[in-house]
Length: 417
Image (cartoon, rainbow, N blue to C red):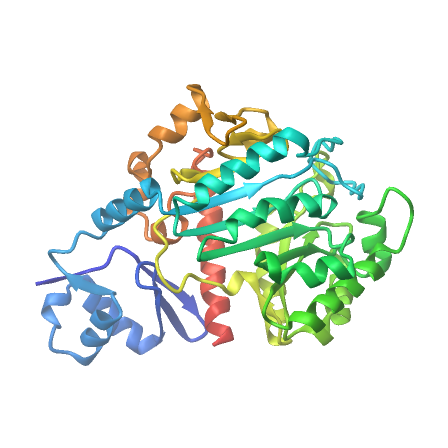
């Protein structure tokens, strides 16, 4: 006996439908006539188990054995990943400083650096962790992490002992030197994200240095150097924060980056201001984002939004994991960037690298959190991809946004193939 998967998504597309299963990541295009037949099969698969379409649907996970409880499989694997001590997921903030003065920046920039005894504490903590895990992923962020390159190198040393290790660097791209570029691979930095907010005249106004300078040209030169040395060995993402002040000139930037289209990934984010009259409303932004990505993809670029999971990940946010932490510039342990910004740590690192954990509301929340408590998720076809969304956001309105983003990714992924 058989039943339809609860993770089937059917999206109107062109003269038919796109069928996507979020559990198996299988995708099919169905012409209108085929869609009508497939719909009948999915409603009552046991009446059509001899048909060719039934076999295709079953082979791709749209139809499953009636004894399979997909939700329980997700819960079991989610709990397994959550409590695993074999994988280490870290965001490390070596400073809160920055050499830029972006007018929309939400961070409270301060001249605070992870140095001295605090740096030694963190290095010892990482050395102990490296002996306990089999794999690790680290994101270096800030502030501006390139202002702490020597500290990043020191903290990377113990992590390099982990057989499956790699790092992401989120930077404004301004502070790269030839020496830093040459050392990127030595410290397993295999992914870099840099923000350019438009062509030079727009970018230099929005992402300006503390002293007026053509930061766009310097960043683009650094991008060129990274590509010349590493090609596609480093995943290089160029992000743009879009709003009403730069949207009309966005494709000037894309045209200027066209020579790098085989080597860079394009990402578009929505700028959030304290004064919202400059912001693009979220629904409108999602529509524009989809349109822009489609055009950019046809130009030959890779777009981050196209990356649907090739296999199910079983975790929504690294914060949920037992070994998922943020290490702040103060050598304290946090669970979430929002909580770091609010100074709500869950532990402190001692001189010997051990951690004293604090029993507080934050630590209790993360210890008890589970997607099992989210009732809407139990019947949601998008669960295997979003895994409940942000644990700290209980507003169900986020679901509509997540679903629309995933729908857009499905369409763009199909168009690319």
